Length: 244
Image (cartoon, rainbow, N blue to C red):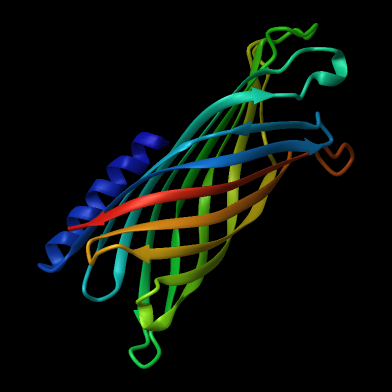
C-alpha cells in the first residue's frame, strides 16, 4: 500500500508541476510529543513517543496542492501491565497522500481549504515479556480521508496566522500477531482535528506549532459477537518549513 501511495504521489506531482510553471514547493521537518492509546473491548494500553515528521507539498497558482507526509517514532507501551509485565516495545508510523485546494479572500486574508486523500497507519505492540503466546502484534490501517479547514491572519499576517482543520476517515484495518492470527475489521471509521500557529520568519522560511489528534474505532466482530478496538493518537509538535 505504501508503494502504491508513493507511485501515485509522484505521478500526481508530475501532473501538477506540468500544469503550472509557477508551482511552489514546500519542504518541512519537525518533531512531536505524541500519545497513543488503545482500548475498547481489548487491552487498555498507552504509549508516549516522539515521532519525526517529514513533509513535501507542491502547490499551483490556482490554489490546488498535493501533500505527502510521513511520521514515525518508537517508545514503550504499558498494555500488559495488568499481567504484571514490564513496559514493552512500541512503534508507530503514518503515511498520507493528500490532494486539495485552497482559496484566499483578499479582503480579509482568511483562507479556506478542502482535501481528500489516502492514509495508512501501522502500530506495532511488543509482548516479549508476557505469558502470552505471541511476542508481537500489529494494527495496520489504510483508507480514504477527507475534510477541510481555515486559516486566519494575525495583524494582517505580520504576526503569522492561526489555522483549524477537521476531517473524517473511512478505513480498512488488519490485526495480526506472531502466532499467525490475522483478522480484518468489518468497519473502521474515525475523525481527525487540528489547530496550528504559523509564523513566517522570512517569505520563504517559517515555523509551525500545532496540536492534532485522531480517533478510530475498528469493529472486528459481528452483530452477535461485537468486538471493537478504539485507537487514538494525539500530538503536540513543532515544524520548520522552507518554500522554493
